[in-house]
Length: 92
Image 1 (cartoon, one colour):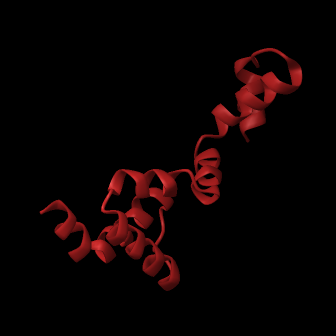
Image 2 (cartoon, helix red, strand yellow):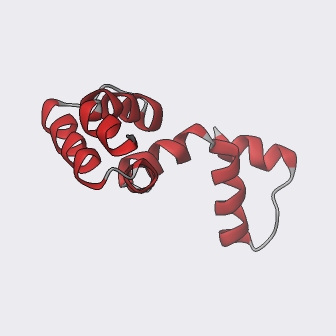
């Protein structure tokens, strides 16, 4: 029953994955490719994990968390945790 559901609703699932993971509507080719993957595998967890691990998702995740990125970068460059003022300045 689950495999039938994923095949029947693959396109709608793909559209929702784009909105949920990447925060945007998918382009026609992307929706078509993702729909095929969903219908073929039937494993939404695998397809979702692949999308969440994409370069686009990774870059959007970094931009959404500037203070975390600033803290990591500061630690890598300076070898210590930034002060709150340094973290705020680097995040901007």
